Amino acid sequence: MIATSFARFRAFKIGARRPMAKSGFAKEHLKSLVERIERLEEEKAALSADIREVYSEAKSQGFDTKIMRKVVTLRKLDTADRQEQDALLELYLSALGMR
Image (cartoon, rainbow, N blue to C red; front, side, top):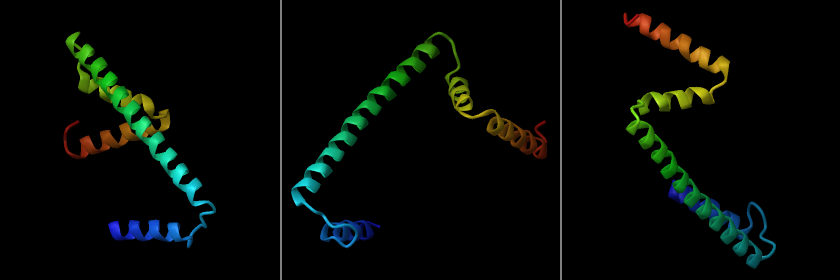
């Protein structure tokens, strides 16, 4: 896998895929992209910490955070997908004698 990635990078670098018109431009563009990714990763970490804090607050107030996480997941689904999942869950539970 690493060898394949390196081969792709090398092919890109030597121009087999797309010629690098200005080496300095490509270098600066790559650096800019990496820096943007790093900033976004930092923001993502901060958001994750904020979300954990909200769940901690909910738990301290007596809410079941596992159920809250499930509710958040379900709210992301559209109605048809949620109904399909519910139907499959019912089918599986029935097949296992749990309903």
